[in-house]
Structures are given as structure tokens and as C-alpha cells.
Image (cartoon, rainbow, N blue to C red):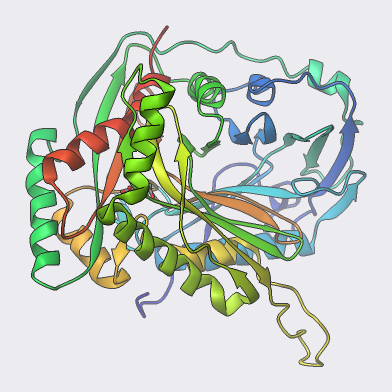
Amino acid sequence: MSATPLPAPRPSPGPVPGDTTGPASEPLPLVVRTTRLDALPGGLTALVDLLPDTRPLSWVRRGDGIVGWGEALRFDTFGPGRFADAEAAWQATLARAVVHDDVRLPGTGPVAFGTFAFDDAGPGDDDTEDGPARPDGSLVVPRVLVGRRGDVAWMTTVSVTGALDAVPGAEALRDTRGAPVVPPGRVTTTDGSVAAEDWPAVVREGVARIQAGELEKVVLAREVVATAERPVDPRWLLRRLADRYQACWTFSVAGMVGATPELLVRSEKGLVTSRVLAGTIRREPGMSDDDALLHAAQLARSSKDLEEHEYAVRSVAAALEPFCTSMNVPDSPFVLHLPNVMHLASDVTGVLDRVAGPGGDGRPGRAPSSLTLAAALHPSAAVCGTPTVTARDLIREIEGMDRSRYAGPVGWVGADGDGEWGIALRSAELSEADPRHVRLFAGCGIVAASDPEAELAESEAKLEPMRWALRDD
Ligand SMILES: C=C(O[C@@H]1C=C(C(=O)O)C=C[C@H]1O)C(=O)O
């Protein structure tokens, strides 16, 4: 973190509660109401199928999760203060919110979806002639949210007029049928800022720096730019990803879309979980289950992958430790099977320490929010390297790409601070300037024994989910 003064969060030009009352008066409170929904259809894509427009909000896995649309409130933040400013804006909003929550589960009541840049200082920090740079952090409170957790489904509406909206429910849902989802048509892809054939040289440089003793691990990424025949509708991507990548969290926030297998942090009722991934083997198309098991066994024994994994687990455990009274860090990873790759995976868990009450009177206070935890865990060695600052500096020096929000936290936070934040991997950033353009990203953990050509092949395998999601078949 740098010591430069932080820019204040800039509220977006979207509807802000204060707008209706003029500049001098207090902003109107958000009025939030959650009611149970009795008849939500089931299935892996049932939630994302509800989304009525091309600015969807989503956090869905195996048919459970939350989706939202409309923008009751949005906060855009910039630079190294992007997390703290977003948290402050969220707390200020909650302090004025009026909440009727009949369901009381994680994801009910007020919820903000968020997406944050990987780097404290991306090349996009300066405003351009076309307008202000893309924000480094965005929190979006939808006008309507629908969620499901097992047998329970709910709908939340958020009013910015200071009064309750009409009673939400099945009728309101029927009204949400919006613009049809349009497939992207023919898609062509081209190299991003570093051509695929030049990328192994970047990896080779990373290996050389590691072998020279500058650092132990660095995660290097590349991008591919896709151009579609028609504007890319994020709902097209969400439907395909939610259906095929069931073990992943299918997300969409402010133009960042993907299906990530990596959970930076979930915080729920005092328990925190992080699913750490590092160490990868490709799963060839058409590979039999027996062959997949052989590959999995090979991965579980690979000392290079186990080393990469160990760095990532240690970084997460070290970042969580100050917040926890007890933790469980598995001794050895399991193998997570995905349609395109297999990963070494560890679920790190902990019990949150209740920080002292505001008056220092010894009464239990509020635990840190999931957003604060995500900020503390970011960037883990799974997406940056070890040691963190050396790896981050090397990424800035040799990667040759603006990561933007790729590999940054993406997810949601609720009123009590509970929430879920993934790492924006297997992801794409939709262009605001031209909705036919999409940047796809993939990166690989590099250690002393890494082979640059094998890493290029691994990055291709990690691009596969988004390449496939863009397909028009
Ligand atoms: C950086 C990415 O993935 C990360 C790197 C991995 C690896 O190098 O083995 C595995 C999972 C992720 O933590 C990516 O998908 O872009």
C-alpha cells in the first residue's frame, strides 16, 4: 500500500437515493424488503434465466446463490483505498437503510455485489480523453435480487424513494421477462498485449528470476481479445457457464463475468472458509474417467505442483490467522476435477475472532466483514506469488498486461458483513466502449521447475471455459 492520499469514492452517475431530494438534504434511506418465494423453478440455470437485461449481477453455484438486476446504488472506488472506501460507503448506506427481512439467511436483506482490480495501481488509473478511467472497485446494490439456498427461495426489492415498493413476489417475477438473450454470433480471437508465441519468454524470465533467488513463486498471466459479431450479452455466458462449470461460482458484476473455482473467502455466522487452488493438470477433451484418475494421481504426486500449492495455502493461512481464534489448515490437498483442468485444492477454515466492542468495554463487537477479509487475503500466492510484494513488482515489470479486475476479488457482502468473495479467474471483461469486445484472461503459477511451453498449454486450458462460453452453439 502506498502512502499517497486516497481519492474519495466517486458515486456513479446511476440513481443515488440523495438525488431526489436535492444537494443540501440528507440522502433518502434505502428501503429493503425480503420475502419468501414459493414457486421458483429448480435447475442449474434457473436463477440466471431470470435475469432481464444485459447488466446482470450473479453469484451462483449448483443452482444456489443470488442474482440481481437494476441499480439502486453503486459505489465506484479507486486505487489502493478501493476496498476500504467501498466498505465505508457500504456501512454508511446500511446505517441509513430500513430493512424488512422475512427470510433471514445469508444473501437476504441488503446485499451489494462487488468487483475489484487486482493491482493497487493499474495502468488504467489515469483519466483518459474518453472520460474517467474504469473504476478499480465497484459495489452495486441491485433494485431486485432473487436468491435460493436449498429449499428456500427469496426475493429482495430495494427502493430508493424512501418508501416500500409494491409487494414483491411471484407476480413481480413474472413481470421481469425482459430483453431476449442474443447469442454473440461468430467470434474471432486475437492476441492481447503479449502474443501467445511471445508469452513463454515472459515465463522464462520469471523462472530465471526465481532461479536467481529473487523470489520463490510468481503468477504470470496473459490475455486474448475476442470480437463477436454481435454485442456480447453476459447472460449468454452465464447460462452456459452455470450449466457446465457446476463446481465453480458463476459471477457477473459490472462487466466482469466468469466461472471461478477459487473461493477467496466465505464468511458465514463466524465461520470463514477459503478454497485455495494452485497446481494444475490439463484434462484433455474426451479423456476417460480412468485416465482422469491417473492424471489426478500424477498431479497429487507432482513435487512442482505441491510446491506451488504450499505457497498459496501458506499465504492464505497467514492472512487469515490474525482474524481467527482457531484454524484448520489441511496437511495435504485434494484434487478438484473440472471439465477443462484438475487442480490441487485445500479448504482452509477458521473461527472468526469477535473484535472488541467500539467502546473498548470488552463486549463482543462486530467481526470484520467478508469484504475486509477479502481485502486482507488479496492477493494470495495463488494469483500473485511469494513473497507477495516482490512477485507483484515482477508482474508489473514483465507481464506486459493490465490485469484490470482479472484475479481480483469478486462476490457479494450482506448487511451483517457475511458474504462470499471469489477470485475472478476463468473470466472475461466486457468492454464498455464496444460491447462486441471481450478480454479473456488466464495465468499460471511459476516456480523454479516450470517449463514455459507447458505453462502456455496450461494457460490455453484455463482459457477454455470462456472461449466455450462465447461459442454460438
Ligand atoms: C491464475 C489462474 O489460476 C490460478 C493458478 C493455478 C496454477 O497455476 O496451478 C491454479 C489455480 C489458480 O489459483 C487462472 O486461472 O488464471
